[in-house]
Length: 245
Ligand SMILES: C[S@@+](CC[C@H](N)C(=O)[O-])C[C@H]1O[C@@H](n2cnc3c(N)ncnc32)[C@H](O)[C@@H]1O
Image 1 (spheres, rainbow, N blue to C red):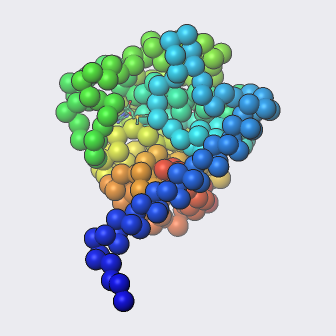
Image 2 (cartoon, rainbow, N blue to C red; image 1 turned 30 degrees about the vertical axis):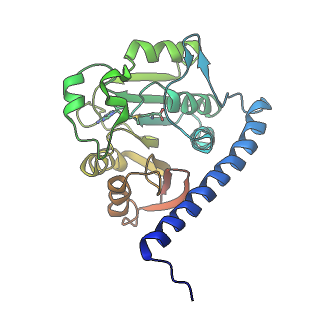
């Protein structure tokens, strides 16, 4: 009988898992591309401006999920995004918000307080903070929103989620993609989760293995999954999303 040493077996399992993940992503991508280019949903899967592609990191099915969640909200809902970066997820939320006539608020320090940003623990590596990454400013992202006619639909807020004054306004869709460290994710959820209306949604990026961050996954296990107030609806690539009961 051939026995496979544990380490090699794990490596094999991991390779198969990743291959299946990519295959799944490929099919979803083909499906999504057909949907998006049909024009039905009035959204571009690979949005650009005069300055090139909108910067950010989302898999096709993650774009689809954010867009669809935003379209499904009751009319005149409030979408709150933590972590805008170059505005990619903001674009999909904003385009979905056009359908539900909702408003998007997006908080990010953008290119301000760079010394503080670099000194913060982001859970694991934060590529967007590398010295030569040229973090977009609020003005850069505002130009992206203006280019896509989202000026009146999206409000950009420069600052950190834990320190801005949100005045406890109710939220219908909370998208958490800011600092991915355990304490930061818990803090964001504890500050904004209670403001989500019943029937509303929360979605976390980087929270599904193998692409998610272990600390982010753990933070969700200890908060949303453990709470009887929330029902996990599913996972899409590296997004976990839940509804408030
Ligand atoms: C992974 S990027 C977001 C990418 C974007 N959501 C997308 O999908 O295109 C994370 C962003 O969150 C910002 N960030 C980190 N901590 C934050 C906090 N406490 N509040 C708001 N934004 C934060 C970072 O500066 C960075 O721009």
